Image 1: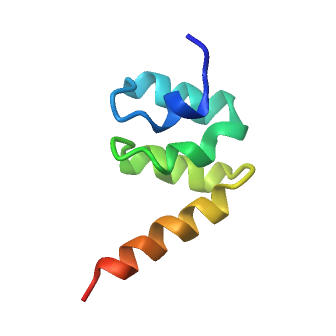
Image 2: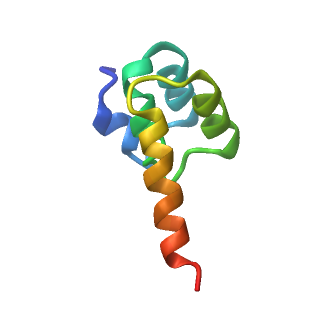
Length: 70
């Protein structure tokens, strides 16, 4: 399987593949943040490890959450 942004974002991607992306493809970590199936543990790992676009990805995620809170 080729690891791509599409695979990282896909909610049907297996958890072990998401972890492989998190551990071995830092350039794709930001896309894991957009995956609604990503576990809290996986997102914490991504936050701690960082990578290109990760900080901005979390800013967008948390901003979207703030917009939904009345």
